[in-house]
Image (tube, rainbow, N blue to C red; front, top):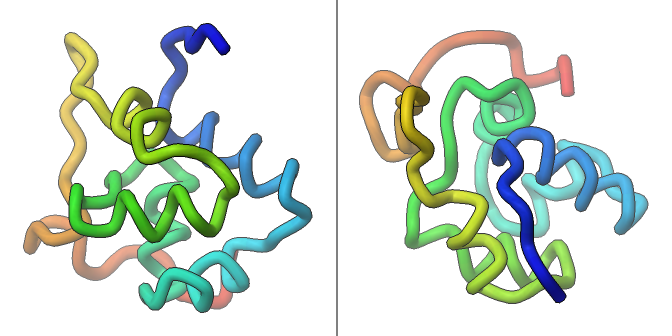
Amino acid sequence: MEMTEVSFDAWLRDRIALRGLSGPTLARQIAVPTLTVYRWLHGLSVPSEAIAASLADALGTTINEVRFVLKPRPGKVLSSTNSPISKGGAPSNTV
C-alpha cells in the first residue's frame, strides 16, 4: 500500500473512525491520558516513538505506517507528548 503525506492528526482521526473507536477508548487501550489523545487529534502534539508500537497495535496498522506519519514535515513543529510543552491544555473530557 502506497502512503501519501498527511498530517498526523488527520491520519489519526481517520484510523480511529475506521476502527470504530473514540479518543478516550484509544487512550485506555494504549495507557495514556485522554488529554494526550485529545492533543494528538487537535494537532497540538504527536506521540513519542515509545508509544508508536502500542498505537499501531490499537489502530490495526504497522509501526512503519505510524513512523511515516510521524516523520517531521517542513514548516511544522509539534511537541512530543513527552515534552513539558505538551502538558496542560484542554480538559480531558472534550475528546
